[in-house]
Image (tube, rainbow over all chains, first blue to last red; front, top):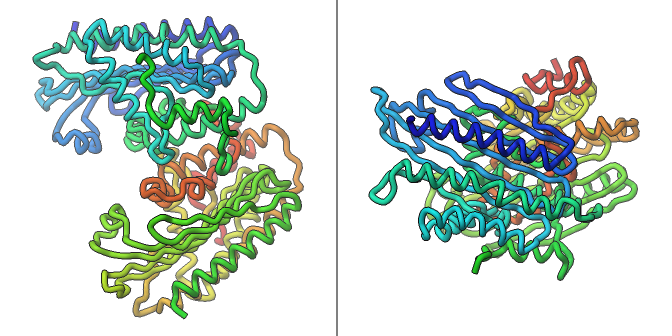
Length: 303
Length: 303
């Protein structure tokens, strides 16, 4: 089977697995499915959950699109007269309880063709990262340990490399702080002397397979913790930073918005209830300040 | 007096007038003042009101900054080795009652110098625009009429020209809808055969002087109207579009974020409580849908 068929089939199954398990945990809300088509070729299957017992809002979306490479992407990649195929799974989960972290993940595959249909480039990308509102260090350690295990099965340099890239990418530069406690981020994983495209497929799907192991135990552990209005307020203020990152810095979001992607599938990543207070600072030595301090400088969670 | 001193003095007084009148209307909350300095030269006076009877959040800020033109602005203006002076007043007011519109205004003056200190360019810019959550056509007409009166005192072409620029500027392209019902937007008002810089000063300050007349009668008329949770929900969802515009499209905001401006003064424009629901559409023939229909295509409010 071709890589693109194999990978698209993989993410279809993974979407089913992830949405089924999240529904089981939630116990109340179900994912609502929207199947959409892209006028220029391809389409997607968006699944959104809202107002659940555990999940206040979340999306687990797949898409597979193809056709002429849009002009903005031709400029970006510095190519001309190309066709492309791209498929991927993107998810963002915003839990209700402020003690449960938000999670984001994405696994994607890209092919570029010349006008005769010959593949001229192909690569994988993606990652997964955690955004807590209250810091439980053991949760960050658990998430990173699962990420590291998936990496180490393929190459001992992967975890430190892609952990660092994650810290660099999810940096809210105008706030001078990280979006969250990180995880993995990788892109342009191409066939080389060291790795075939099949080996990259094995790596990326191993990371995808690790997602539920990385996130679900944290949800199970924290979803029943008590919380007050003041914890919700803090969660909503921090969600404001999430919005700022996604709308100001996230290349994927901006790319989608500027190339006429399906807006509702792209912006499903935005949290349900959000606050902006002027010049908010947590009280000294509070749990809220503890989080901020950790976000100011990336932490080696497994050191 | 030099234009820059005259205009900075003008916006200091205007800030006092506006904040005093808004406090009087609110009757509960007072503006909190933060005076700040810019390391490279100049500073500002940020005034923010929060949790009032009438105003849920708002900022009325002035600043006057100077020094070497930052590299990103040198690129933008295609100049080298320049110094600059810029001052202005920026305001955004988010009322609590969803029947009262949000308003934004800005009036600014810019000078550029060569290294000998000679002025090589100078111009005014600014405008004011209205963002309702529920549409009262007479409010939009009133706001535009006051804008037109201020324009007509100077040139009969100004209102149609700057009204159109406002519609073009405050366009949420990824949603294919306007941010609100518009008003005026102008920039690069420079001395020419037709207007001296003093005449532009007279025009811009006439617009600034018109602001309270344009906005306050609308607030007074709508602030006591009853509303329900469903109206608040709609207001919070529409505020999400306001956030999207400011973080994705607004040149002023992005410029501030990317050139190390005072973050809290820039982002005071973001609304206090905001929602994002997946794929929200108002009910057919509802008041909410009536607003959306008007935002899809700019309206000639005074035709």
